[in-house]
Length: 92
Image 1 (spheres, helix red, strand yellow):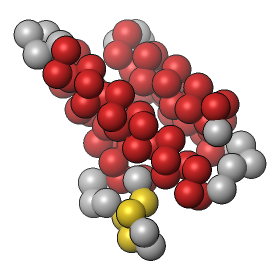
Image 2 (image 1 turned 60 degrees about the vertical axis):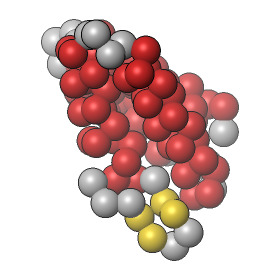
Image 3 (image 1 turned 90 degrees about the horizontal axis):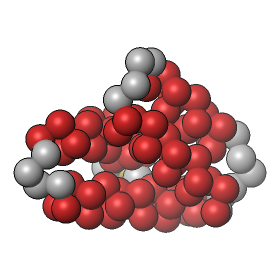
Protein backbone atom coordinates (compact mmCIF):
# COMPACT_ATOMS: atom_id res chain seq x y z
CA UNK A 1 0.00 0.00 0.00
CA UNK A 2 2.90 2.37 0.72
CA UNK A 3 4.30 1.94 -2.78
CA UNK A 4 0.87 2.62 -4.29
CA UNK A 5 0.65 5.84 -2.25
CA UNK A 6 4.18 6.76 -3.31
CA UNK A 7 3.27 6.60 -6.99
CA UNK A 8 0.12 8.67 -6.50
CA UNK A 9 2.03 11.22 -4.44
CA UNK A 10 4.86 11.56 -6.98
CA UNK A 11 2.28 11.86 -9.78
CA UNK A 12 0.60 14.71 -7.92
CA UNK A 13 3.95 16.40 -7.33
CA UNK A 14 4.89 16.14 -11.01
CA UNK A 15 1.51 17.48 -12.01
CA UNK A 16 1.82 20.47 -9.68
CA UNK A 17 5.30 21.29 -10.94
CA UNK A 18 3.62 22.02 -14.27
CA UNK A 19 6.53 20.89 -16.39
CA UNK A 20 6.25 20.09 -20.08
CA UNK A 21 4.45 16.77 -20.59
CA UNK A 22 3.48 16.74 -16.91
CA UNK A 23 0.16 15.03 -17.51
CA UNK A 24 1.87 12.18 -19.38
CA UNK A 25 4.46 11.85 -16.61
CA UNK A 26 1.78 11.80 -13.91
CA UNK A 27 -0.23 9.24 -15.88
CA UNK A 28 2.91 7.10 -16.19
CA UNK A 29 3.36 7.00 -12.43
CA UNK A 30 -0.30 6.18 -11.95
CA UNK A 31 0.00 3.37 -14.48
CA UNK A 32 2.87 1.93 -12.41
CA UNK A 33 0.68 2.18 -9.31
CA UNK A 34 -2.18 0.38 -11.01
CA UNK A 35 0.10 -2.51 -11.95
CA UNK A 36 1.02 -3.18 -8.34
CA UNK A 37 -0.52 -6.25 -6.70
CA UNK A 38 -2.90 -4.46 -4.33
CA UNK A 39 -6.55 -5.15 -3.59
CA UNK A 40 -9.27 -2.70 -4.60
CA UNK A 41 -10.13 -1.76 -1.01
CA UNK A 42 -6.54 -0.69 -0.37
CA UNK A 43 -6.51 1.25 -3.64
CA UNK A 44 -9.65 3.08 -2.58
CA UNK A 45 -8.16 3.88 0.81
CA UNK A 46 -5.01 5.31 -0.76
CA UNK A 47 -7.04 7.39 -3.21
CA UNK A 48 -9.06 8.69 -0.28
CA UNK A 49 -5.82 9.70 1.46
CA UNK A 50 -4.55 11.38 -1.72
CA UNK A 51 -7.86 13.20 -2.02
CA UNK A 52 -7.45 14.42 1.57
CA UNK A 53 -3.88 15.51 0.76
CA UNK A 54 -5.16 17.51 -2.21
CA UNK A 55 -7.93 19.13 -0.15
CA UNK A 56 -5.36 20.13 2.47
CA UNK A 57 -3.07 21.51 -0.24
CA UNK A 58 -5.92 23.53 -1.72
CA UNK A 59 -6.77 25.07 1.65
CA UNK A 60 -3.16 25.97 2.40
CA UNK A 61 -2.65 27.57 -1.03
CA UNK A 62 -5.85 29.58 -1.13
CA UNK A 63 -4.00 32.65 -2.43
CA UNK A 64 -2.32 30.76 -5.29
CA UNK A 65 -4.97 30.12 -7.96
CA UNK A 66 -2.57 28.22 -10.23
CA UNK A 67 -1.94 25.61 -7.50
CA UNK A 68 -5.64 25.39 -6.74
CA UNK A 69 -6.50 24.89 -10.42
CA UNK A 70 -3.85 22.21 -10.96
CA UNK A 71 -4.83 20.43 -7.74
CA UNK A 72 -8.47 20.34 -8.78
CA UNK A 73 -7.54 19.15 -12.28
CA UNK A 74 -5.46 16.29 -10.88
CA UNK A 75 -8.21 15.42 -8.43
CA UNK A 76 -10.87 15.33 -11.16
CA UNK A 77 -8.76 13.44 -13.71
CA UNK A 78 -7.02 10.88 -11.54
CA UNK A 79 -8.53 10.56 -8.06
CA UNK A 80 -12.25 11.29 -7.77
CA UNK A 81 -13.44 9.18 -10.70
CA UNK A 82 -11.70 6.18 -9.13
CA UNK A 83 -12.59 6.39 -5.44
CA UNK A 84 -14.98 3.58 -4.68
CA UNK A 85 -17.67 3.89 -2.06
CA UNK A 86 -18.96 0.43 -1.26
CA UNK A 87 -19.78 -1.15 -4.58
CA UNK A 88 -20.30 2.13 -6.46
CA UNK A 89 -18.01 4.79 -7.80
CA UNK A 90 -18.01 8.52 -7.19
CA UNK A 91 -18.89 10.45 -10.34
CA UNK A 92 -16.26 12.58 -12.05
